[in-house]
Image (cartoon, rainbow, N blue to C red):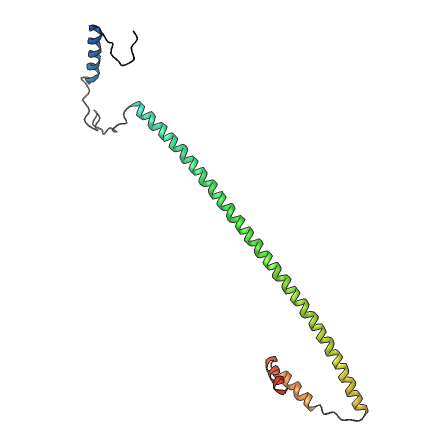
Length: 179
């Protein structure tokens, strides 16, 4: 009959029993030249690490250290990727913001250009009317001079002096009082 490992035979022989007992007892007793270890202290007087004195424990620690190092590398890699993604997002947001600013500046420039063109056209229109009025006034003065009618230009000179001395706001106020 086959037995499982680490299970005693149902009918052990006496010789096996004695050798098994002797082996267990021999394993439990330390050699005569080595002092027994006290809790946490090795035979040579140095502190021993509790629970880490077997090769299995060392292998487990090595595996844990290896996996921890691998995870730390992955975390560092992910942090680098996250930083790169963050930088890309900032650059992308910065580019979009600068494009929006450029678009706003372009629209503002177009608006100013349109404003300047309209005012330039109005100014040209006003200059054209001033030129017409100057010609009409010159013709009237000339006609009056041909008829020997004296024209008093003292009022015109007084207004010219006021134009030179007064600011546009003062001239507007004076003109509105005269009306």
